[in-house]
Amino acid sequence: MVTTGMKRAAIGCRVHSGWGALVAVSNDGVLEVIGRRHIVVAEASIPGSKQPYHYADNLELKEAEEYLARCFTASGQLASAAIREVLSQLGRSEYRVEVSGILMASVRTLPSLEKILASHALIHAAEGEFFRRVVRKACEEAGLLVTPLSERELDEQAKKTFGKRANQLKRQISSLGKQLGPPWTQDEKLATLAATLILAS
Image (cartoon, rainbow, N blue to C red; front, side, top):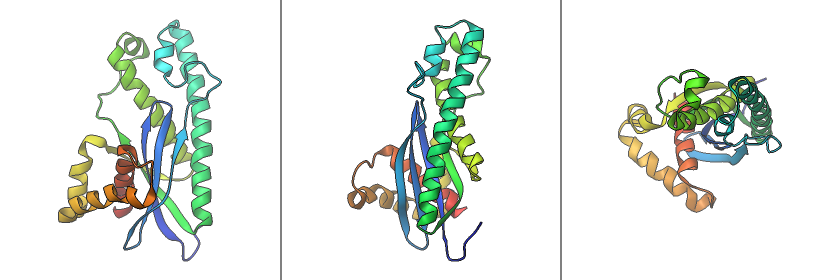
């Protein structure tokens, strides 16, 4: 339900193995970070859940498939709970969030599980994709429109969207850490830029 007078906001997320940095922004003439947190998306009670493909590499193929499915379900529950909590908090503060942006790695389409587990490089790539899919699914289930954004092409996308103001915007985002305090790492900065792009589009 949309409430009259609520401000538009967007969420940006940069995901790592087992966790993600999430930033919510509003830009009603002035760019404002209205929420940020690290969300945990690895179930501590499941062995190896922070690096599920590394753990699965020690299992038989059938066991590995079952283990990864179990991890995905458990991680999805954690992500969904975190996203819904964030949206609830923002809603109580009179912000309406309908869109989100998730930063993606530029990786080729992954092969079969058997081939992934035979390559250490593919194991790392698959784990990154695994947790990004977890967060994306949680956002979609919460009713958000999700836009995947290539991290490598983020600067180019900013130039297309904001033109000459792109560099000024990036400097502004970098400087936000002074008033917000830590953490304000590359994770938060890129997630903020992603959310700002999605909000502008």
